[in-house]
Image 1 (tube, one colour):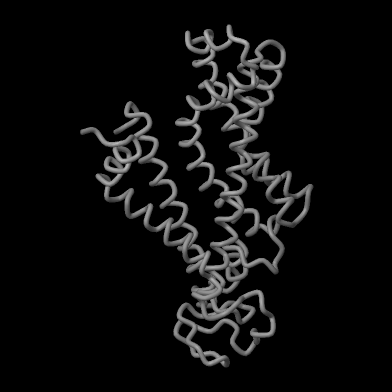
Image 2: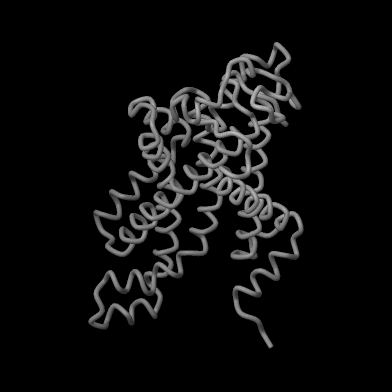
Length: 291
């Protein structure tokens, strides 16, 4: 007896051990960030628990608070393991939030413009094509510099830099579905246009959009880290991974490698894991892309 589509999808996914390990890394990271207050020994936001006497201490150092700093401390005396876990929480939160908003906005622009057609479609897609001709990091840098530091400003910059990927993908998928017989039949009924879009066109556009979403979440995390590293993202009080790497960059040549290296490793592992999961999902949703 054939299994459900979800069971079949998971069975095929499990056949790729690398993808399973990558998924486990992503899920463990999410769980660790959710359980951060009870999992790590220190709250990096609590200035009352920080002391400069513990600043830039090597891994394994026993601090004045009495616990061992497994990964050492940073320039502010924060436990580096605690700061990394809280930084992962910020990076994942910003990446997922920006990805979801860009998904919703870009998919709406692409699907609606394809359905409406005419001048609206032409103008919308020319704007999208123009944006896609520039690197996303360049647009994010300009917007972040103009809007200033802060979570809301950074979120706007990330969404504006990435929605075009979803819009172009949704437009191509919607255009392919728009002229099929079942859509033409639905349009001949009294159903409102928005119902036809939501019920018939959007569901068939989801597979390629899901693939783009997995890639763009990883890109959002990388963009956030880059902007924070350059001082254009989150303020210094937010222990994002990019800010942690930037805070320790000046100490690399003095031998205090752990301040930058460990947050950088955590960032790379997370991005690679998300991309590996996305590659497997892409291969299963579109077998023609399999290597």
